[in-house]
Length: 410
Image 1: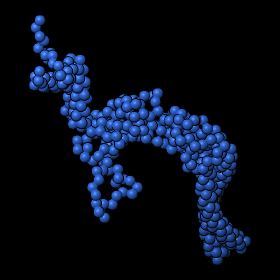
Image 2: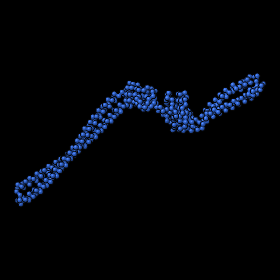
Image 3: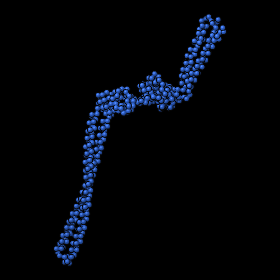
Image 4: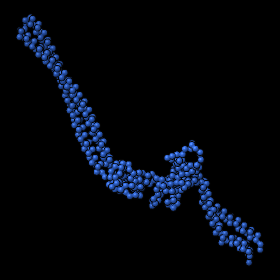
């Protein structure tokens, strides 16, 4: 029977037996497969490190809306529970509206009274306008009467002058002359009376106009008071509407700190609503930002989901380090300076929806990895390279074992 070239010749010493076990297929093949797996993992990590930037200083963030009342009062009803999902415009809390309903009714009554007063003054203004027009018409009539009296007086003057000439010539009797003289006196008296009446009627125009001007001022004041009362009504009705607090957006109720019967103040935080638009704020080292740009693809691993990964992309990079915008930014111009690598917040948006059956909220830890290079080696190529290197290592290992076996003394 011919010998197997892959099998070493039998030896009697212990070293030869150990070498034979290491060179046996039962050890070589499992070791080769294990090495291939380790090489695949190592190469994948190596190539990923060349094309990706990652950090574990990253957290979930979302818009958090604080819910606070615009008025003070006693809470009548709370319609939501902590951690409950709510929709936009959903009723959250009701404050006892009794006081505000009464105030609104009082303001409405005051507004009605001011409206009635305004209408009364407005009617008075219309009346005074009519009086001014009547006074003007009366003055015009008086002026016309004065003009007529003036004409009558002029005619009487002319008649009296003719009567004087005729009397000198004894053409008319003394009685006729006395009649002409009486007519002129009557005409003069009528003219004087007409002129006085015209002056009096003209003054009544000015008086009526002055009264109308005062009434117009009263109308303006009454209108201002009416509008002020209407504004007070609107304010009271607005306060009444504030007794019902609605959700401003879709989200989840958190940090609820209100119960029925509590007396709340204006601006007191009752609860918060976390909107359903989670994103990631990753604090990368400044040395990792050389190739990072908005739009680059990323993978986000969420710890709360057991390391489940989600597709995402870089939205923006903050213009400055986080320390520069802290409450007490560092002042490097004083004292000794020690260079510290700064962290810069990077905003990352998810490209796929997060699972609805899990609560994902602000503050949860994540581990994002951003692809900063277009260079990519497919997984099958890395696996093939790992297999080739593993088999090459196995061949070299068997070669070394065979050389050692050949050098053993028989």
